[in-house]
Amino acid sequence: MRPRSLPTISSILEVERKFCSLAVQELTANSGNPPFQSIRSLGQRSIHDVYYDRFSLLSSAGIWVRQRNGRWEAKVRRGGNFTNSRFEELSDPRDISLCVRDITGVDCTEKAHFGLERLATLSTIRKAWVADSEFRIVSDTTDFGHTVGEVELQQQAIFDTVTDLSIEQQKQRAMQEMDERIAKFMERYSWAFCPGVPKGKLTAYFERKAT
Image (tube, rainbow, N blue to C red; front, side, top):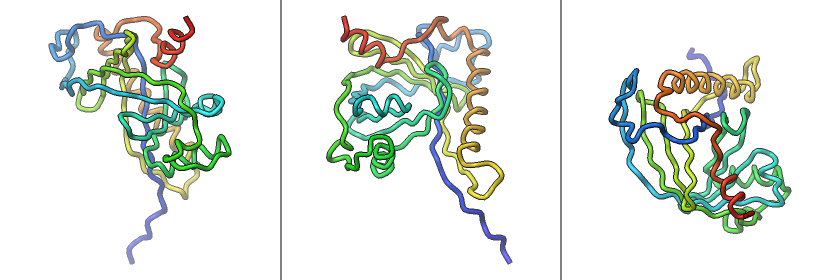
């Protein structure tokens, strides 16, 4: 008899570390020491983001819901801090609706913007690269001139529902390993990244509106 497979849950995990800006003009020149094992440009694209919330309930819970170029996304923080973040990403409107309902108590579909109100609107020019075949480097410049970058790892992880570790513990362990890999990558190629404390796009957006 074939062994029965254990029930599993699939999640998209994303871990990122922010940086202020790139320290070199063009990463594909690969002129630093040590050079990247490989570096490939993903080109440049325009991103239009509309962020939504309800009385700051979502952001206070570490959840960001947005329409990116017309598609709904939710990023649910699973640990870390602003500079060093760990997220679970939701793209199915049904999952986003359930996530919003759990926090706000409002049960609405995407047609009603999940019962949320528009929080911020901003446009970004994004340049992106893939280094060493798996690390995604992005550099964002907003329509109001703010620049910030990220090194990201994303993976679709499969978790067993019958194990000594809970699903959340399995997610945390996987994201910790991803974060450690990013930290080693950025340390190895420190010549590519400007030092300093990065500021996120939304933070810069609200600071600008307040002046």
